[in-house]
Amino acid sequence: DQQVKQNSPSLSVQEGRISILNCDYTNSMFDYFLWYKKYPAEGPTFLISISSIKDKNEDGRFTVFLNKSAKHLSLHIVPSQPGDSAVYFCAASVTSYDKVIFGPGTSLSVIP
Amino acid sequence: KAGVTQTPRYLIKTRGQQVTLSCSPISGHRSVSWYQQTPGQGLQFLFEYFSETQRNKGNFPGRFSGRQFSNSRSEMNVSTLELGDSALYLCASSWDGTNTGELFFGEGSRLTVL
Image 1 (cartoon, one colour):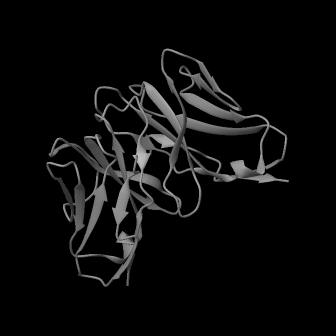
Image 2 (cartoon, helix red, strand yellow):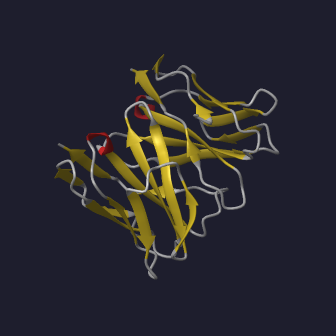
């Protein structure tokens, strides 16, 4: 039973346009959400996070939106750059020292 | 500050063998988590150690085990290897295991079981 879902295995976007990566979760106890980026042959690196008390968090070109009622979050990258081409993992956890659960990932390709 | 170091980076084993993977966390980090990455499955949580104690455990069979030493270094062991154990095994550390913060990942150990 996958608690964190990323239904789009891949996404292609033109350079300069917006990339929107989606994530759905089933566990209503999750109260912290994170996005990680992974390049081939490297470990995932943290990108941005949001707690359940917020509905938006922004960091430069990256913005994460959280819709708790829909159990849905999305990552917006504006403008997209070729260097953003990577696999993006959505992750979630219940605070108080619980494990971090990852989704299956979405492979983003930004076309120059 | 050195990052998370995993050894070995690549290894090939045959079915029935056992394997031990090592992870050195970032200095000062006390929590170490292990994940298995396979195509299409994302990162599957194996277990998490904090101060030498297993604090969280995923849904993997007992063939998968781990431990953490007093210096926070961690090892994971897989016994009686199966073909399906072929995967990238990732280790991540964090300063105190609070999962409101980021995990710092190593580059992984790529295991191939023949």
